[in-house]
Structure formats: structure tokens, C-alpha cells
Length: 421
Image (cartoon, rainbow, N blue to C red):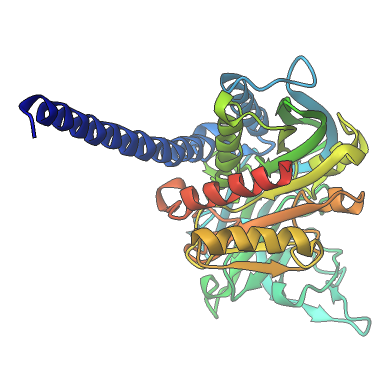
């Protein structure tokens, strides 16, 4: 071999090695960006500054503004000047005092007790008394005694005929979880783990303040990437951003897995499809729904006041609880829209992204529901395995692994590409 030929071959081999090195590192960095961006979103949305993304201290509005700014950074177009679709609803909130003590021992809010979503306000010291059940199966409180707290087994879910001015104490042997409600009792109501109440406990002292808001205004946050071939045909990716807010002035529900993780996936997808090399054939809409925790109100409002024709919507892909995945994912409506489910499962099998893609039937458990009720094909996916924190103070970003997040992102984007064709 001539010396000149050897030099050229050597230089060519070095160039190939350099190209492979740069390509590998660029690909790795790109995939790392998905995780890093998701971690940033989860840490921000689940932080104390968001007030639990609920309806105390405008937590939902702070979160909505943050998501809107991320949409703008990705260059998403808006159906309106603000990216917002506003609507109103009643909500029971707890911005004020939160004090509970049994026989003089103060309990820790969030850990020892959680205020019931239907609690009213009240202050005083009361005698603890177990419920009595009348012949109709109602928990009944005698009208004569006005200074006791009725203790009810929450697991029985029994209706209450409550004529006392004292609080209702729900006890359970399960973990404490919180919810939201648009109605309320005229007395305080709290949930306790039964082991917190000593067998010989005599009295309970409470000071709880609620605030009922009959017409709270919130907002869905909506942006889109216009399709290059079929701009009037739409694919929707969605996730709810609201959570349970605050309980008193110091305790808040972070909602890292439910559903800051879903928002992290939504924003990663928005960033992905806004890139020129990933420009979609169909228009892709990204919706961050409010008031899911109040009863799917944000998605219900959207389907009743759509910003584009629902009949032109090819598919809705809703994401909730995306932070784990050791045991794979469950697909609600998987058995309803079997052809699409089979394709999603095929993509996963061919690429070995996650452990399992499990099918489930119809369920009204997230924001996909009102779309499918309107005749739009829709999936709702959630991850399985890992941490058990849910609707409590322990659903925190520092304990959320996001261990299958990048593989889920790959699965969803490949399925999204399939839907466009």
C-alpha cells in the first residue's frame, strides 16, 4: 500500500470514529435532556411555591402561568391570545387555622390527620363518642347533646344524620388521602388513622377554618403545533396540572407523581414536536387541564366548548401518574380501542421499552373520559409499580424516580408518529 493511500485511509477512519463519537454523545445528550427537563418540571410544579396547585393562594394560576411560559418557549401556537380557556366552579378550601388535639396532645396535620374535603369551620373542645346506627342505616347523633364529636368508621361510607354542633371524626385503618369537594358540612370533619386515638381517649379539641368559594375561576392551558400536511386534523396530548392545594397555612400536597409527572411528559412532547425535524403531519394539540381533581371539570368544559371540531380529532392521549413504571403501564380504554392498543403494544414489544402494556376497559378516572363519551378515540395511560404515595403529603419530587420516563417518552412519540399516518 502506498504511503499516501495509508494516510488517507487513516484520516478517513479517524473521521468515522469522530463522527460516531459525536453522534453517540449527541444522541445520549438528547435522551438525557428528556429526563433533565422532566426533573426540572416536576421539581418546579411540586414545589412549595405552587401551593399544591390548588385553589388556595391561587396555586392553580401560578402553575398555569408556568406551563404557559413553557409552551411559549417551545414556540407553540395558541387558539387565543392567552393560551387559556377559563371556566368557573364551586370549591371548598382550607386556607386558615388547622388545629387538632386529643386529650391535650396536638396532632400533626397531614401525618396524623387530614381534614375532610367536606369539612366546615368550627372551634371548641368535645367529648369523643362513637356513632350509633339507626334502623335506616344512618349514623345518628342525638339532638340533646351538643358538645361531643361523633366518631365514624370511614370504611363503611355511611351517610350521617348529624344534629350536633361538634365535629365528625372519620377513622380508618388505611392510609390517609385527601380529595376536593364543592359541598361542605356545617361542622368540622377530619380523617384520622385509628391508631392515633388511644382507647381511653376522652376529648378532642379542634380549630378548623374553611372557605367555600361559590364561583372560583380557573383555566385550561392549551397550545398546538400546526400540521404540515393535515392542519385541520388533530391529535391531542393531555395531562391535568391541578392537585389538592393546601390544608391550613403550612401543609400542602406536592402532587409530584399526580400529576406533575404527566405535565413533564406533556411539556417534553410539546418541545419534541415543535422541533423542525419532528414537525407533525397532523396538528398536535397540548392541553394541561385544570380541575381534574374536582371531578374532571376542565376536560368536561373543554369537550362542551371545544376550540376545534371534536369530529376532526383523530385521537386523545391522556397522561396521568407517569413517574414510575417498574411494572409497566396500564391503558384505560385499551379494550375499547383494540386496534390502537395492539399497535401501542406492538411498538413496545419490538423495542422493549417497558415491562408490560396492560389493557383496561372504560373508566371515568381521568381527562380522557369526556372525549370518549363524545365519540372521540381516547387512551389514558398511567405507570405501575414503585412508590405508593397518592393524594397525600408524601407524593414528593425527591422520592419520585422517573426511572422509565425516557422509555415511555420513546413509546409515546413512536405511537404519535403512527397516529399521524
